[in-house]
Structure formats: structure tokens, C-alpha cells
Image (tube, rainbow, N blue to C red):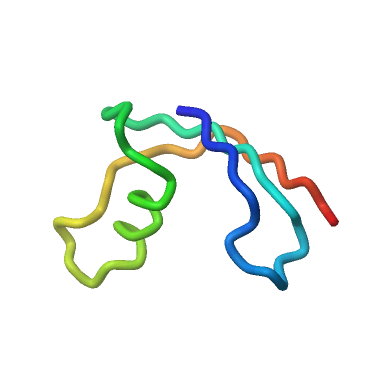
Length: 58
């Protein structure tokens, strides 16, 4: 999957990003992946493999 978004935080050192991630479900968003990583529930984790990230610096 290709994810392209603006920076999540206003004080980030980058203004936007492009990420390429291998996932088994083409409906999974980057937000879903992050919520799964930060969740305390082990069943929330979404298996993925990050291939490439490009940050557009401010």
C-alpha cells in the first residue's frame, strides 16, 4: 500500500510523507496500523512490513 499524508503533528520536522507498506488487507489505513502498534491489546496489531518512507522536510 502507498500512504501519502500531511504530518500528524504541527511541530513535526516534516510537512508530509509517503510510505510504502506491505499489508494483507488493501482497506487498512496508516492510522489503523499506528493504532494497532500503540494499543495495549495484542489482537489490535496489524501485521505489516514497512518498505520505504520519504519525508518532505519543512
